[in-house]
Structure formats: C-alpha cells, structure tokens
Image (spheres, helix red, strand yellow):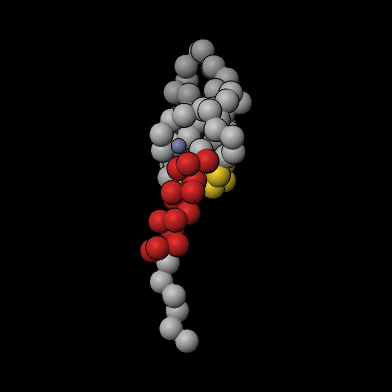
Length: 81
Ligand SMILES: [Zn+2]
C-alpha cells in the first residue's frame, strides 16, 4: 500500500520569507510503467501472455500467473453448503 505522505507536505507556510516559491506539484507516481511490463514474481519481460496476480491484472507472466491461479484455487475453501 502506498501512503500519500506528499499530500500533507503543503502545510509549511512561508514565514515572511521574501522568496515565495511556488508550491511544488508532486506528481503522482504512475503505477503503470510505460515501458515493457515485468513479471512481479520472476521479473521476466518475455511472456506470451500476461496474467493476473496479487498485485492486479497483468502483473504476472504466463507461468507465474498460472501458478498463482493454482495457489488461489488451492487456498480457496469451498463453502460448506
Ligand atoms: Zn513470472
């Protein structure tokens, strides 16, 4: 989880300073890299298909995604009906 520390950094007021610098605009870090995606598990960038992982969709390569899906299925407990 990311915490927005920067959001609270604007409460520093100018103390009668002559140099009133404009408030810096903090750019939000784009979560999506514009470059080639990378598997969060094995860091490969070469995969025929991107799969869903714990961090969201298209964060795992094909192999890791399948592995993750398997784990999820295993840990998934069937509700007793
Ligand atoms: Zn992978």
